[in-house]
Length: 351
Image (cartoon, rainbow, N blue to C red; front, side):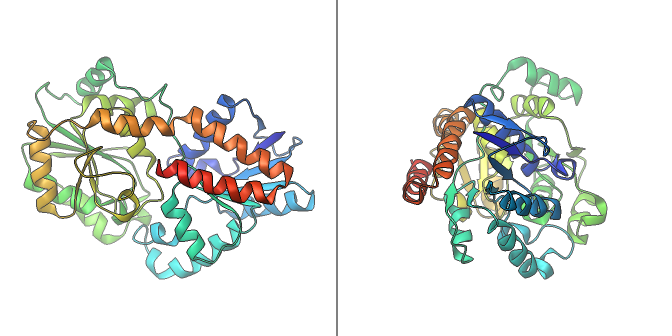
């Protein structure tokens, strides 16, 4: 069995969660001993697609003509497309039809969570859909004192300076507006937003939030994962104010790095995370502000070990084994296996 992990136009998504997911898949295949190639000219048995660009559609159709199997990773939904880039809400219904067309080209569809699986099923997609986490590389993302020192030295931060970080594109859905509002309320805390988006794609509301941000908000732009690991190690809180996700790889990374975490209380995280158990949740600016202050001064209990126990189940080695089982069932063309294993994935995801 050989997998074609198609990476065409990867540069367009390299700095996004999809780009990171593709690299996770490479690592998962290597860990599980599955032979794979990224060269479309090589022979293969199964093609794995991650983007919804026209080139991926062409590759899927060519694979079908050659009687090859297609695995389509569903990273996007209409729900998480909304409130992102300029005009996204207007074209969201068209986007939904397009991703449905793309995903239906897959013999099976893989999506990161049971939440996103239910959304896709609600679209009327009848193909087998597996809820399988993008995973996190626990061998790489682990806290380190030296990394924290490098981060603080780079940005000239004192040892006692309180640092709150977040990671994401400059889009409304990620909660950047509330992030800036909280920074204005808390001038004694330094806030970092790591990530970048082409200014031509940024809505006016987001542009205004960035341009009016106070001096205690720093926008370093996109940074490599080595620097991000250092930032996790050297910060006091990971603040994730996203309004909608299919999973949120950066949240998994933060859990792996054992940094205190505060997230927005949204549907996707209600089944797996309990407020005050693995992390903290909030819904309003007042709640966020109150919990940030308490976390930073140690008035709320540490939850990092509980959060780490949960993320250990999403280690890239475990994901690789589950991915291999999906390939095996697909190769055997065993429809009963696919249905049963899809249910097993659902149970594992809930566990």
